[in-house]
Length: 331
Image (cartoon, rainbow, N blue to C red; front, top):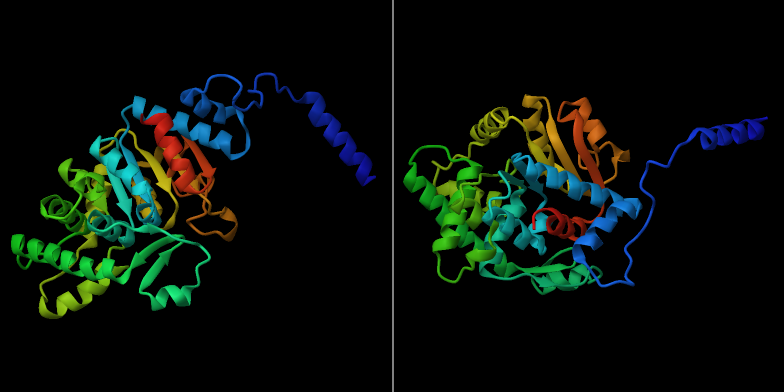
């Protein structure tokens, strides 16, 4: 009986389904002269995650066309990788209104402005790299020397901020802004590919609510021993991002990966009943109930995304999907 029932159900669906108004599945035709714009457009009709990426491009175009302030969140590995240069471009061209990242996403921009990272191997033995003074971020290699130099740099940042505001708390956005300023002023630094520099130049706030969860926090531990006036105030930044959000008629978000950076911009948008546009790019799945893997349907239940928002989640490595998104919408 069960089999008979299933057969009738499938026939019912086929009989009543009208697919004629839906786009047909069709990939790019490489038999004709290559056209990059048409190539990107073909993603929308290619199915699977290519179709979601095509939708993300169209939603992002709408954000831009409607002049909606864009909140861009990204995990630190985006700055470890070549996505740093793309984010710097968006900040330089004032394509985004708010940037939000984790501690590593701040630190590594400053480090890479002075010393490059290098492509390595996912499978390299950890013990061998450790003995050589190399840390591995996936297949990206960083040396102890990178962070030794960074210690001197961030101490200069703290010194400058305490000199400007003696006995006053400093905020993560002020730290990020001062970092951008010093990157532009110091010899031996390439500020052109630094998103912190361009954010500073264009007055784009960089939020980093977990700024002590990394090298900055480690260095701050020792710095505060001799400089007890160092106090980092995250609440003032919380007021800043929420006030900004509440004063926007509409808001849009592009979230690369998850973690604190993604949640922070979503949480701020609760105060205006949710985002009007939301594009997620992530490999994280929703089945473990993590916020990183949470989709927009979950976000709707918390008023982080409006029920009628234009939204899509692209299940893809952001180092692949994000350059295509930018090429298809911002260029």
